[in-house]
Image 1: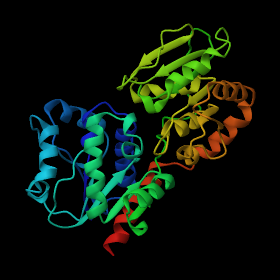
Image 2: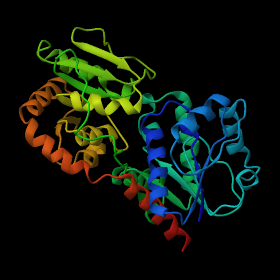
Image 3: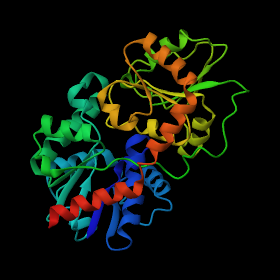
Image 4: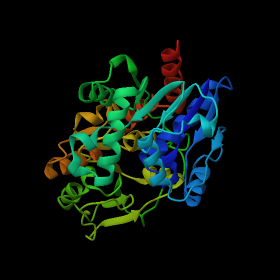
Length: 359
């Protein structure tokens, strides 16, 4: 098959969606073993193209990255206009797999998309207005025309069926994978000899970091620091200028494993996720995890995390103390759980979905 994958989100600093796109391409290349032709496609600005090229460094896929000023506006207009067909730019294709950023027309082949979560529909107050508009239009389009809908968890898959009315036979789960660098062995961050709790998340309302700050205030700040990793997002920002809290901001992906390994505990109090990949990454690095009890995180956690009500600061603080006490058992269970998630299996799931739909 000739498979064209929309990689537009890679034109910005990589967070969860971008990491998933890159990882899935790596997995597809390995799973295909040369049997399929994989094309990474995105209209992008000059800077965006450089970001995409950097993200795809070492990934053996063809690149079709036309440089266009005002790329975001063009992608939106192209999706709405319904012309010209994608094949005029990328040539013949058997599958077009598009992201949340655009849904241009195609003349033939399977039409496929990825849904990471339906947060903009269920909780519009948690996302930026532009995200609501962009994702809402994509969801409606996908429900009407897609042959295949890939999701990152069974939770999201069930939500797509129930909320968007998509035929369950079209919905396929492709769990995220853990990159090879996320292991227990390796360099660890030394925070001047201090133990620290770690959280990794974009600073936005859904990530619930204000509640984590409240929980941290209930702990012994002399014994444990709180390290916050993640770019500023939108909306009200958590108050991080407090004793014991260290904010690192956006951190390149290659630097994350040493931060995970050095942590005494990883805390993820998110109110809602599509999957929750940082949880599995932390487990793979040998860190006990405290995670929100929201069911959207059940698959990421398995039975290997301490769960806590994300709306209850006291419960989060108690869960952190429990995780510190039960570290050895939680680390062992987390390492075992994390081994389930590989990009090779993710790639196989994508290819199997498209092969099944084309049969």
